[in-house]
Amino acid sequence: MRYKLFGHSGLRVSELCLGTMTFGEEWGYGASKEVSRQIFETFLQAGGNFLDTANLYTNGASERYLGEFVQAEREHLVLSTKYTMANPGRDPNAAGTQRKNLVQSLEASLKRLGTDYIDVYFIHIWDFLTPAEEVMQALNDVVRAGKVLYVGISNTPAWIISRANMLAELRGWTAFTGMQIEYNLTQRTSERESLPMARSLDLAVTVWSPLASGILTGKYNQGQGSGRQGLASANERNLAIAAEVVKIAEARGCSPSQVALSWVRQQPGVVIPVLGARTVAQLEENLQCVHITLTEEEMSRLDAVSQIDLGYPHTYLQPTDPHNLAYGGLFDLIDAHRASEKERSPKEERARFFAERLMDRSEIQAYMQKVQAGQATPPEEIERLMQEALESTFHQLRGHYYDTALSTNTTVLSALQRLVPASQILFGTDYPLPRKSGSAMR
Image (cartoon, rainbow, N blue to C red):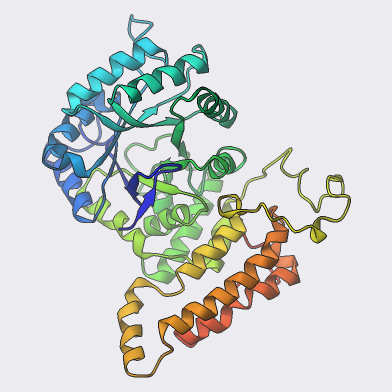
């Protein structure tokens, strides 16, 4: 297990998050207390430290169980919970983002969790009745009181999050450092606004339903789907996506869920899948996704079968669109020096991801044995070659910041080919790169 910085903060969280909506059987599904404890312990043994719950989950049982489980190691764990939602009742202030519900919900969560502070406190869903100023000031107050360390937001339009963070910056309040969204191969609409915003504002993204309520495990393709299907639908499009996931998994000798989770993990920015499980076996299988790195060809296949139309204004703003005269026809001649690391396009981030992972973890030991025997190039020489290749590649990619079809751009493909010699030294074979024909490389 590796760790990531939680957005624009110094908080270190595991690259996978344990979702605990399945802790408790009050909703007619989920795990018993004993099984929930085993799931929790399995996650910690794998190196995980990031835990996700909410005051509503299983009518509070999730928080109570988790509060009991974390006592022995509370200071080592990153505990997140959420407020806003409530079951139908007679109290109009039992739900919503207003200050009254925030204070009451936080106190109740602290009591159930048996702790005096929450590491990350999320708004669960946006309440369009409460002014953003009230929400952000109230969140800042609980941070100043020491009851919350960081704040996040879930299930909210990008423009609201952006405006709220600007309010916080201007008034010296605590801003959101993370957000939680639904995102998977069957649900990619967040790529239109939410994910680009997260990269621009340096927000960590925790992803709920990364397996599309089990559809991406392939069980519905085999007619074995059962249990809670959730928001995802086993329609023709989604089953076709799941079928492609299964094909890649079979070729790799891994599970479909590991492929689907790896696709999420390999997206640009800080993207962290939230793993929910009803059995220890489910969690153990999904945890193995950290050992899977999909090739560019595999990513392209999954992108092609699941792609969405970004729509207006994104298609209109492409520098290659004849209607876009913002660059006077000279876009390719302009060196965009402000394309900093956090502003890289998905393609540039993808190139960096693969460059950093050309050597798989399982091959490191064998490689170092060859170096000692004089049968392989030393790592410092590999590092020098890779640095030269990356500098050349990113220099040419920088002028192609927008999401253009790289498969038709021979200049950029030529730059990417510079990565091949270094991979040949490592493995003695060409590292997979997109060919000029076929779908556009992402």
